[in-house]
Length: 134
Image (cartoon, rainbow, N blue to C red; front, side):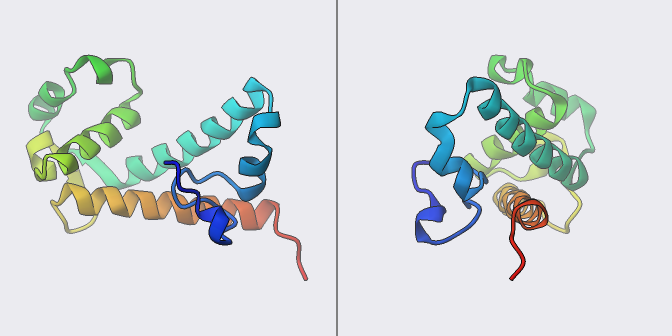
């Protein structure tokens, strides 16, 4: 995103969700180390998307994901990218054949909810694995 919240003291970046030490050491990591980090973050997002979004209209959903840039993505990546697309166009989730587990049909609100939950999970992962008790 280009604006890292770790600069302001966050232990986990609110944009990319990487840990502060990962951001500082990023250029020194081997490609496989960087890929492990992206895989961890992708798994977190996929879990959240799977619990947040469900397909309620298969025909509408299938029609929406028939674009070249969505074809090579996993099912959860497709759902996430479709929600992003709907939010940009200010179109409700139902227009993409989707429904959120929350009471909203607003794509932007759902996207923000997913982002917030991924951040919370990434922060919990950091605190569980890296935080040093006082």
